[in-house]
Image (cartoon, rainbow, N blue to C red):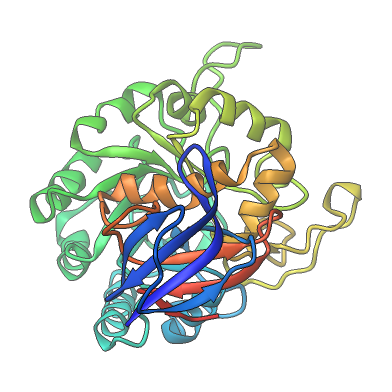
Length: 380
């Protein structure tokens, strides 16, 4: 069956095609453009709504209420209803090797079941990060030196579905871990995360596939090499190296990343190297007192008052990025779909193009969701 979405404003990478039509067939985009014939199609009139590619969240732990490692089916379904047509559940370093292996098996089962079809792999925010950074760091079981006998079972369990592995490049012996992962999966991407690495630590891993900075400006150290003089650290290195994509958690009051900093990052990195993420967690600590946190109801806090990820689904960061930086619909769709697809080498999604998978999101000008299509099937 062919489906024609008519009177649509198509959000392309750098422009909008107004009053156009999308033809969907066999789960893919068969054609798109203006004045297309719709003979033989079931027609849905979008009445001038904006259509972009489905969102791709490469880094989130939960749907704001339940972890993927508790109920991957519920979390995946909630995200899909919000337009996240592809998601990579994130596993966290607070789990032991045995727990990580069990979590990997649970996600793999969900992927293979066909009942969580928007899960496309794993984001491994584990095991070897800097134990001084990140929420729940007091429960880090990976403080000991990097050891193959400890990490090999985790890598062996996940290598074919783990698309991104986070590392703290300053950890002694990390290169052995990186090489082991790369031998198992040459396409693996590495991300600098929970780290106080110096530029040279990070740049030596770039030839092995370090191309990402996890939640940029969050849980990273600031180096002071000389008294009263700030030197370059993780964040500056990510900004300096164009090859490195920067993840941003964009909450509505600008706690994770200050709005001025968001605008600075946008200016420096350009539209091709920003990736919006939700990084949703489940902690339920109270919002701290003070004007700074007024209205911060889309952020998770632990019971010590420390930030513990967000409560958001990715459509929220898209709206917030528009508010804080003046980003356009074209730009936020790029940050939340095209750029993550490009990072991961997903050539059949992330943009509106003939032949691509018909994962689509229909929104109004403020990025409020009207419809969601996954593989050409209307979900919402």
